[in-house]
Image 1 (cartoon, helix red, strand yellow):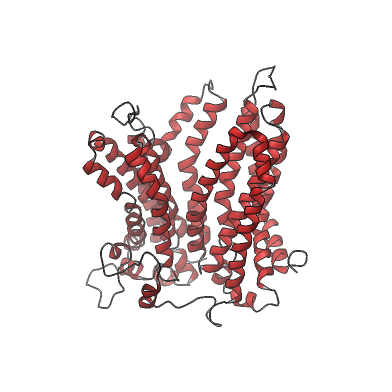
Image 2 (cartoon, rainbow, N blue to C red):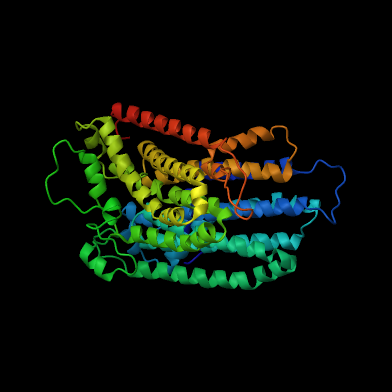
Length: 538
């Protein structure tokens, strides 16, 4: 019942693994890894296998890439496993089945693991091609893949626990990312710190300590998910719970959002209790004053609290301790906006489709521009205010520290890049919402495309620097950094003493900011044309 004859597992595997996108994803993934090995393979006819760094460098690159893939893809497959049942209104039918909660949870877990585990296992033969280069043993390679599978199981269990608690896939997805990405960074630093102990230490920990920790964490998370299924919401509520705002504020632990007070009213204004003013945009007013998520303010409070918890040590180190790492903190702010920015815009139009109100909106007298800026500003306002919470320490440092006065142009350049990223994430997520049919599809599409824009150029440059330093086309790969605000952040100069100074230039900043502004204008034109056509809901 739990594995062999689990109908949940069988149904999910048959539905997902037989889909053409599963074969396409597997083929593209394996082809890219194979191409990576071919490109990075040394051209020397004789290789010293006893003291070769190419094999170790390439295997470490394999591990880093797949570890990041597991961290980013696990929420994408598991965050909607149970929350999707609630959105499809099949949650209560699942609870009424003779399946036990543990059987449902285990079936969802292994079904979510099937996609990514298949990709990881399929890459093992390609990784073994690196063994003849020397520098890494077969057992060390097994230790890397063992640790990778343990991390994959843990991150999937975290996403499944979030999916069992939240009512929407978008809320489950963003909380999963906020919990997984910091832990993934800590795990990566810990694993790299073990490199000095050699392959034996890593293999010992992979066989003994890491599996035990994985089993304990996974069991606890699955137990929580099973208890959530065992004690569902009221029958007839379709898995939803009605939250009273006053009661929630009295019972809330930690941060409490008060809609009538500053700065809370900037991103969560109180519900309207009077008539709408003449000439006001009703679309914008409705979007801003409606409930952000279906579970009160818990989602919003978790986003703020988790982001600040991660940011506090980074603030101390990057802003005041070692100021040459200021770009690292700015990159964290950009990454935070990449996570939360699309969440508040990716469902702006798809939610109208899901509620079957899109055709009603299209036949109103609202102009396309009123609909676009009403939908855009509501999501952009929330994501910008949340992102600005991470910038107030920089403002304090700018006031009290002469180092930031000296580098005021660079600080302004950072702020301009952050502002452009805020606008781009909201606009592109809104475009995905216009084109997609489901909020989960819109959100994942926005994450994938924006993630590629931000991370692909610097990743390509790191690969070329490590394996192809004399490549003639290297100059074009370096110029591709203009498409990545993250890469541009690390090119701006910092002036100071020898400890804090960092050389740089402004050659990428202007084209990056200007290019993204033009890109945003193009996104607005596409959405305006789409709304002007008054397309019918498919």
